[in-house]
Each structure stands twice: as structure tokens, then as C-alpha cells.
Image (cartoon, rainbow, N blue to C red; front, top):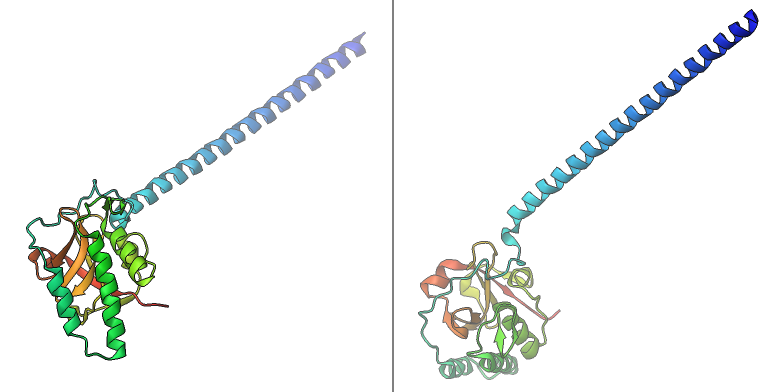
Length: 233
């Protein structure tokens, strides 16, 4: 009987010990799991904040992001522009031809592009527009280049600014060169047109629709960013 009691007491002690060990192990496991979750939570938090920080950086660099709608960052193009006589301009261009085959080809290319530009004259401005019912500046240059010279331009003014050969000196501008302007606060360049000679360029103005303007105009002179020459590959 005494032996049985001792065995019972011993068994109870063993069971109690195992129970304590089991609880301790379970508690330890839960604690470390919690720590793991905490660490993961902290990692996720760091990742989240890192993402927010990166977003913040992107928000800063978005100054040059063409995806900003123009109604959020409108151009302030001038309204006080004189009408240009395209007929006189075309005669002036013809007079510059010396009669050689090369000049005749150049003259023909100019005429084809000028006729395409004339087709769009007075078309109303429409941001995102791409037709005679309404068109924006980069769609205008893109359509004219494609129809007149079978050359493909990128869709946005900013992307067109990355194409072609850089023209450093305004005195070296030639007919058909793309000219760019800083007209918006957050998107640069904000505007593009096509140089047509005599310091004039054709473009889709947000104030006047498709029109001809002068680089000598105070507004465009101050905001001129540069030019690109697009050539056949």
C-alpha cells in the first residue's frame, strides 16, 4: 500500500513536471511566434513606409510626368497673336528653291507638310484629342508628321522631346523641326510645334486651336526649351 502510494505520488510528480514543461514549451513557442509576427509586422511596416517614401520621391519627380492631366496643370498660352498669311509664306519658301532636283524635292516635302498643316488650321484645341474635331499639340505634330512625311512620332510632347537630333542653336532651325516650350508648371516640356521657316511655327494652341505663331513673340521666346530634327532611319 505504501509502495502504491509512493508510486502514485511519483507518477503525479512526473505528470505535473511534464505538464509544466509542455506549457512552458507552448508558451515559449507562442512567445516566439508572437515575436516573429511582431518582426514581420515591423518588416511590413518598414516596407509600407519605404513604399510611401518611394511614392514621395515619385511625387517629386512627377514634375516631369506627362500623365498629369492638363486641367490640373494648364498651359498659359497667349491669346494676343497676329494671324499669319500662309499664302505669302508658301511663296517665300518657293522662292528659296534654286531649281536643282534636291531643292525641288525639299520644296515638295515642305509643300506636302504645309498642306497638311493647312488642313488642320483653326481646328479647336482638345486635350487628348486626335482629329479635326479637336486635337492637342503633340497629336497635331504626330498626325502631320505621319501623314506628310510618313515619320512616326511618340504621342506626348515629353516623349517627342527625346526623339531625333538635338538642335542647339535656334539660328540653325530648318523647316519641319520640332520646337518645344516650357508652358506648364509640372510637365516639361509642356508644348510642341513644327517650325515652318521665317521664325514661325505651327502648333495646336490651347487658346487659339491650330495656328501659326512667331518664336519672336515674347511669350514663346522666354519659354523656348529647344528643338529636335526628325529624320528617316
